[in-house]
Length: 391
Image (cartoon, rainbow, N blue to C red; front, side, top):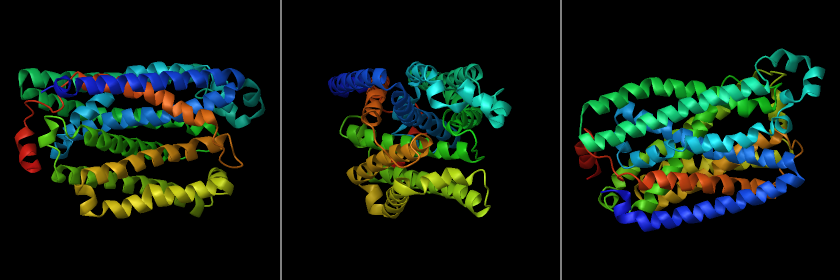
């Protein structure tokens, strides 16, 4: 049964609302950009990282599912695949950032490069032309992965060819390697280079966990909203949500472990070149935001996700996932904005509208992809086992 058979009108209405909200919010941001272009690009980058992270997390989790063959992926596979087919839109939405490089990055300002020996040393890598070329490579890889994963999955629906499952598995192993390499370089290019005197070898892995956590939280919320529709109504069971809750708990723990490991290594090692990055984020208003992240992005979710009763109740787990999704947005704000606002957090109105604008367009594209395919994979060799597990 396809999504249009039962959800067509609802998905169309939600898509129109998302598209309208996105267009209006981005139009207001663009108008504000004429008065304050620097703030526009800062807010746009922060919002873009959030929504592109969900898409990247979707493609990573669906490849992980094909590779390990877990039954937990049965009810979320179509949602993940729909998220992985949004990279063409994200590539188009990345273009405005190319016009604001000099307002975001010191290495894109010739005067700053001329006055800084370190920037001169990094200039062969950190320069606008090479930056753009690398971005093209990243998006080409992500678009190709999303295209093949969806193409072969739908071909499996049509043909019931068991060889396609092996083909998807064969793609996912190298695909995860490509994902890891491209996300690592993209996180360095787009975020770490905002402060080019600072570096961390664990930074790319932190962003992988941010993406996986946000994608899993997003998927759980979407599945809850679709839970009453056929054929998902009979498959969204407490047992399946227990599996998804366990995976969400894993990503929460990995995010906390990597984030704390980076802090511990830099601080305990008294690394003079790296400590200022934390000094800014651990003083003033940024310190309070860090405490909020520790409590609401790790402490509370960790304790709640240890409880089976929370993970087996669809609405309760979805509410927790929605909270984690919002805290991921706060986490990105804490990672990105101190590069510009060192005295303390200052939420500009474009910091609110930019995520709504980009998110509206992205959600509309996501719903378009979701509507055009069955809500559950057909003729999957693992389907019988997954159904038995859910029962």
